[in-house]
Image (tube, rainbow, N blue to C red):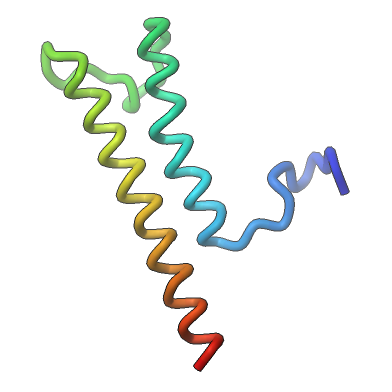
Length: 81
């Protein structure tokens, strides 16, 4: 049902949820850093170079998304065997 408060993202499988989280880990900190809005550890400046923070968030989001992809691939291979 659309607009379900208990399940706002619908019926996502585990790998789909982590793919969405990984993509949001890449996109949301970039937007917040552009407007200088703090978001805890995701916008923490580890070095003086702000591009390092963006690259670190991109790497983290990529790893989460890659993990979701491999989980999905294992799921598909197991169900087709």
